[in-house]
Image (cartoon, rainbow, N blue to C red):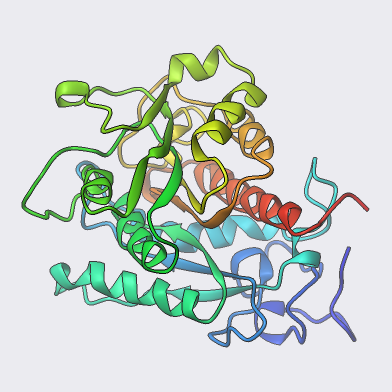
Length: 324
């Protein structure tokens, strides 16, 4: 396990001297940054900036995802040490990762919010880091993808979700059910390089918009390696994004979300699929739709924290991390 140089101190989120490595702190105390990473807006030498997007004004059912980033950070504390199973390495030994804090926007100016999220993410990308966003509702992925597409061109994407989020709308509503229709329409996503995993709802017309859909029943009938093989075949070698709506998981696993749909994935299934996606070129990632008011015993935020760190393990693997 990597350690900071010098004496191990409490509140590593403020007091750590180097960006890499992990320190052991009591899980029940201290500053609750994401996995005890340093809170900073200095992106010098940073590989990954974890940032919260505390928005829930575009939800269609239950609100509360504005509290998601804080809950995921708090749940991550108990996991913030040592190698991550079954990778058997600490991703923070490879990745210089910081907690960049949250995106700021004016709740009284809702139509200005997308541009503020896009600018927030674009600033991180301009500094040379990638983002791991903690939502917030799923609409936040749309302005994030706009920032990525401005840098890399049209993106591929794997979307873990119960819903496709492609409701057609020409009016530009800020809605967590329409944003991927916008993204395809606007050339931000290349639909031939988009795969949606775990879908178990129907929408008007069932148009694919050129995307590949792995419905939940099909995923349940496949191994993690088989699901990952489909994802790899669709995304190919180009720049891609991973977005995980926590309602992809079954409500028995993750009750704390706004639009729960029975019949979803278990956390083991989801984590196994992520682990099997080695070799893809993910430029950015997010975990969204955690709504703590509807959670129980931190089940949902705990699952989200582990999904997020597994994403980082996948990134660390792509940069040479291997079991010690």
